[in-house]
Length: 208
Image 1 (cartoon, rainbow, N blue to C red):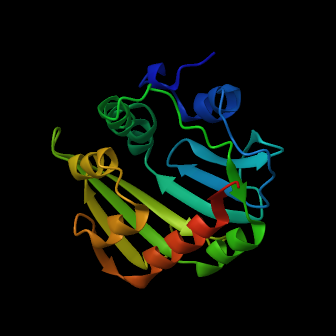
Image 2: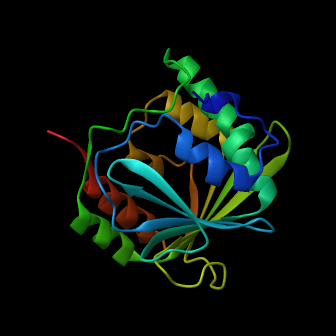
């Protein structure tokens, strides 16, 4: 069994998507999602990740219909998945007194109609996470829907400090308060993140 928090920082994107991710003991809803999440890692390639019958399915390349596309550099992919951001997630779990394991999402109910509404919000979000510990920042471009990724200017830019995010997570801050608590600096279309969050929360409610 693979321990996500022990995956080496030197893991290549191809190994993660094609070998490790499908084998992780993830606890996911027993559902099939109509949309694919596509990850573009500069210099490494693109991979489409889907949920089919409660199991993660990964295809190299771009599959449609696309729900969301996430574009990043290889270095920022490494820090997000196996480096600074992953380690901070472990810190949050430790502060909460929880075991360092990935969350159990099996009780989420997927509403396909609401997922379609989420995709319909559209837009391009630039997310920048600043890490004061190493005086660096990690940038991710999130494209909602199947418009060409990385070819349009962001409709909204969100800048956050990594330590602030950890503190908010440790305090179990409700998702909507993340947008209104002043710790996230949002420019551009200020309404779009709230619309996306509302639609996403409606699409993934805990099962009764």
